[in-house]
Image (cartoon, rainbow, N blue to C red; front, side, top):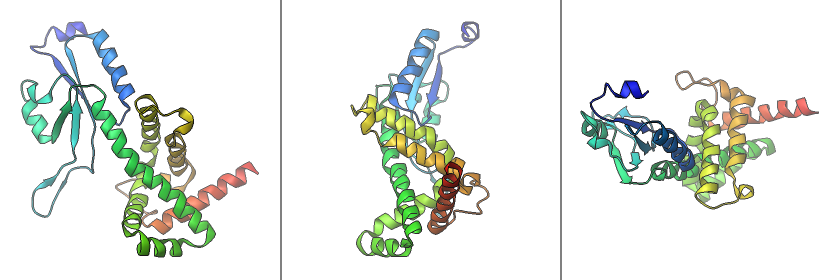
Length: 234
């Protein structure tokens, strides 16, 4: 690697946007620090949906918070352009801050979806799913809207979210100060693991959706997967 860097006219900026814990980001920083002084790590995350062209003709762009002692907009030759294009916002100079922000944000959105999976599946099993939705619409309308959107959209992504939930748990333990037995997200990881590996929902892809296109179907397929799992253990 050192020989390759001799050919460069400047340092290599490494922008990491994976959904990882601050601890993982710090471990990556340690590896680079012992590998080459010519690698400049930028800690980052992606918050929001993928970019898409809006009816107005403008592009919706997710937020890309970054942190660390180095700034992407100072990278040569085109870091400033790339930072603007990606909608990058440098929040502070600490490695782990941006990934931590991503983890805290994801915990509220994907954590709520995991609760919705369990709530809607249990209500389906009890035969009271219509009544659950009726009461949510009457007493907590935002919850049913967010729940239904999350249930439908998570199906093709559940397999990726397993590790992300474990990284959230690591964030809350290492940086939030919570004990492992207080961590709900290791259990939430198992919920998404069940979706991905134990139900027909795990076969869905973003480009080709056939099942799980409604909250009711998600609950139905979750129930069927749980029933099959139970049969195997009996």
